[in-house]
Image 1: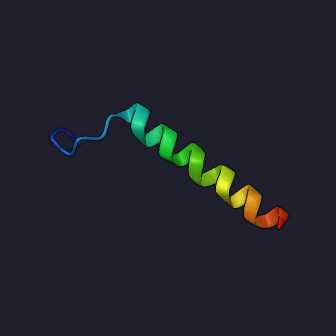
Image 2: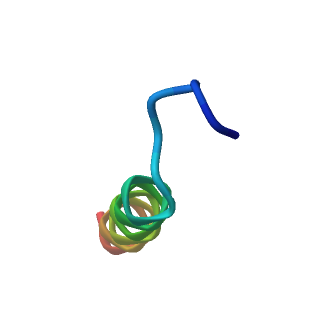
Length: 28
């Protein structure tokens, strides 16, 4: 995934954000 502009850390952050968003959606 070189040249795509996303590092493993970025992907990790996105995944964490996605997971948290899903948690919030379930609460509401």
